[in-house]
Image 1 (cartoon, rainbow, N blue to C red):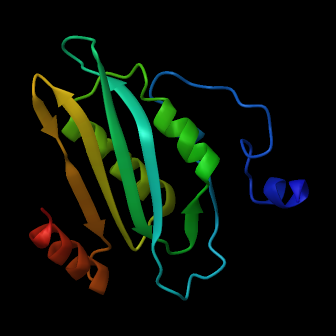
Image 2 (tube, helix red, strand yellow):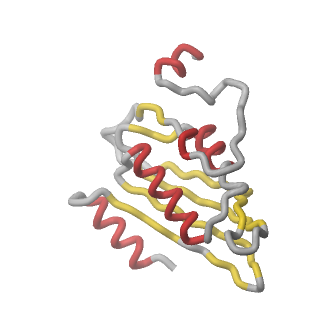
Image 3 (cartoon, rainbow, N blue to C red):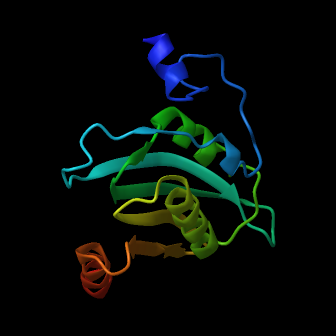
Length: 153
């Protein structure tokens, strides 16, 4: 099992974990999708996401939801956990944070489709729930992205 992880280039899974507390996209890792011929959803929920307000330095808390349809590569879940944890001391507005997460995952694994939602807890009596999505251009997944964006509430 450990040799399989090494063959796929996974370094975090099954090893002692160095934690990063400032934005660290370099910790993200992928593994080979064993079913690339199939279209299926993968969903991650991170109910304890934290970042800080770039203006006040106050903590912001959110649930981050990531759903994607993989192609050849998939994100390894422990590396995703470490990546999301790296936002802990990173200053970013809610909308920027959600788009940064999505763009980093697109660069990492080139999914067919991906969407990221942040359910941020209220600050000053207002909750912010940014949503971003992407579908691979010139495919049916581009149309899926347009449809889901148009009907998103």
